[in-house]
Image 1 (cartoon, rainbow, N blue to C red):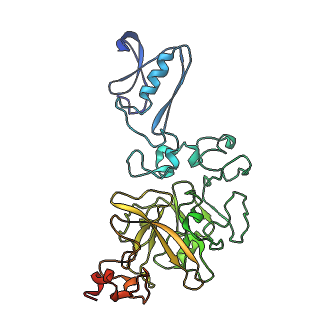
Image 2 (tube, one colour):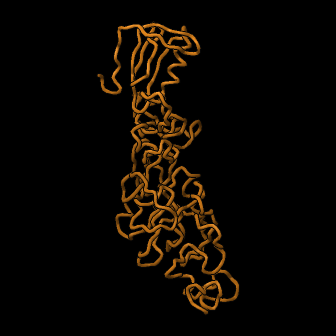
Image 3 (cartoon, rainbow, N blue to C red):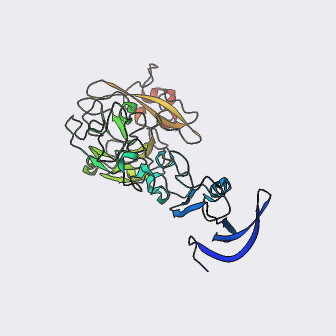
Length: 352
């Protein structure tokens, strides 16, 4: 018996029915119970990763219908495959629920978004990613992430002329994370509000505080991948508020951010200006003030439903065991009471 995926020609005539019409011919068998009508109208049948590609002569439209019925794979049952729908390989979603998505899923190996399967770059220039040797034309093309990891100097010059100026370098000023992600095009960036010279666009992760985080300066990753310690990795799946020890445990639009200056007690912080929050979480606007310059920065963060982000003790930084804003000597909600004098901090201060 042939292995799965190998075509076998059978010489016996069989009869089978499609759309009410009985056919009798030599047939080819792709998998148990799956028959394909062989005829002169078929010029080529080939197998690709995760799906089958059919090339049919217009003389027999019935064979095109058969090809569409079998395009999901060798099985007779329909199964979603990553890359079978437009933008599947660049939407940061696990469409076929196999634990992998976008370019990390082998089913996307031939997608233009992943930079393989086509020797002619001209056909991919306007696809889901930009071939690194393609010269970007801002007059006719949208900005695209590269099909392969790239890195450029942090010098306020677009050295490779791809439209991305010093990505995650900490040299471009900002007032909101949305300005750094460029509408979701670069979701592993955010606006770092506490830079001594003022808020700047940097990488999304912050824990553990180490020199490895600096390695993402100037790095662009292909669609769906996240820069972590200078490498382009498949993002993690940590939920909002879940504990983390590094950014590789958090999604592409989430950073492992510490709740204290020492970098301990870090959690996955989801930014939702470009991506929806998971169930039981809502997207709240948070405004932070730079300690040195007084500049304000706006973040959109996924927080538990029912949490009032404008109330003292209602921010994401408050954990069951501690709440920094209830001991910072600041009237964070401007209600005239500070820290344990504010009833909103009673969970952490007792009766206050």
